[in-house]
Image (cartoon, rainbow, N blue to C red; front, side, top):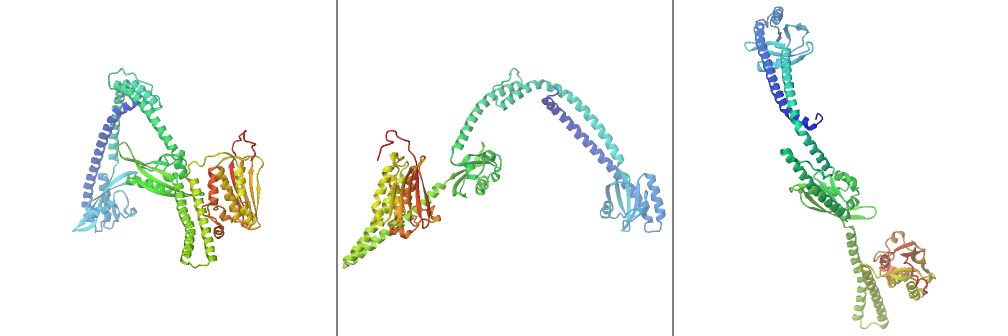
Length: 601
């Protein structure tokens, strides 16, 4: 009972009004008596200063200073007050307790200044010599409107302080007695409330720790019984609601975690309430350590902070685009910030959704470049064919040798146009298929050998030796035979175009045990280091003039890359200018089929 905090609080509720009332009443009484006492002192000082003024006025300005000093000293001793006569310049002429020659000039004292301007001046000061607080009252001494000096009376306030101290002792004693009586009554009253309140506290603490199964006995018919029954109902409803909240929270966290878009929620002070892993990746922050921190401390991306601030200020949706420069590539993020409202419709915070559209922007850029490059590549042969045909039509008398030469050019340009359209259709077919071709286990030796044999006449015509290296055993991959044959053809055709007469080309098919390699090596012109990373781009040519002269479309290596990608492979290039180039395409090995493992080609 003695340790019960509730008992002490209930007792304190009873004691507080008593304490406040006695303290307020006592304080007012003390203050009133103190003010009355000080006012009485001031009236007494005024009367004494007036008496001093009447005594000192006839002697000022005359040679009666010794008589004035004696009279002031005797008068001060008689009435028990310190009296001082001061001339108009502030110099002390007579004092009842001090020798005037040892006293400072008093012209700057506040009571003197006030007496000069208002006809009377009062000031309170602490005297170190007496160790007490004094009240000084000064009156001007005038004759025919001319200021002769000042009469000052001073009294210590020790009597007032003693009276106030006695009154405070009486008030304190009365307050203590009243508080003791109220404390006994409060403890007796609290006794009947402590036991049920302690039981309710135990149930409430159990609910706070997630235990909603405890119940209170509801046998009382008073307000505490009603409270116990209400607490039991609260426990039941809280258990149901907590289960619902936990379920909804887990669903929300799972949803946020699985979103590819970044989500950041902040409160009105811009402190992070929630951040999923996608937002952490975009903003370079750790979601686990970001909660409750200001958003400007979590990330250095200022534009995100500005977007959230604008939403919190305006209460409206804000849409913006964010561009981040990373080491690998530039990142473009669409931001949509919306206000968060509480249950009453008031602004409680803001949430921003970060959608990484970098791939979409890159695809749009590639598409624009592709359309521009394709238009340019198609325009050249079409313009040449048109010009040649117009010349043939307009010049009917053209010699047959010139006509044949013009027709050869038209045929060459039409073949170039046909090759360009064929490569574009092939590239479009490879990109448009969402799943790629139907990959089946095949022996890669067959399409590889077919591609090499198909280009042998071209190599002989150009005087280039082609060496084929094919393993004796099967080289099985999951792939499309036609597509892989075209990949080999494009690599060989590229090597033949950029290798001069008398050069050599090696076409190798390798099974390394972990993967399959198609390798084409030449002794051609080579590729500069700054061009090696771009040779697989569409329409990119290292030597544009030579490529067009040889009928190249600029799409062959791009088709090679796409075929390798849809076969889950990769392409590489190693080259040295003036020495030659080596292109490699790697593919995963297909599982061995026991029936066809040793089937010869």
